[in-house]
Image (spheres, rainbow, N blue to C red):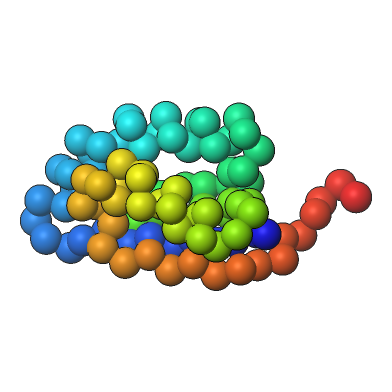
Amino acid sequence: MNFVVTAMDYTDSDAINRRMACREQHIEGLKALAKSGKLKSAGAVLDDQGKMVGTSAHVEFPSRQDLEQHLARDAYSTGRVWEKIDIREIRLFEHGT
């Protein structure tokens, strides 16, 4: 199943510091997901000033429950970076076919 995940950060004054403290661990997790074929695309959500305020990703997991379990272990979840996570099942456009 394919999903789009949009996770928005907390908005307190220390939120960006928590994001930066966890960022390398989060990126390593994304690299592992990409290597497994589960990550289709990902990037930071930016505000009007170009500041990172969230994350957006297209992923493939066997079920929503598997995805939710993965997200609960992500450094941005355990590090209190993400405040709200929206998960939507999607049908990805398969380019090149």
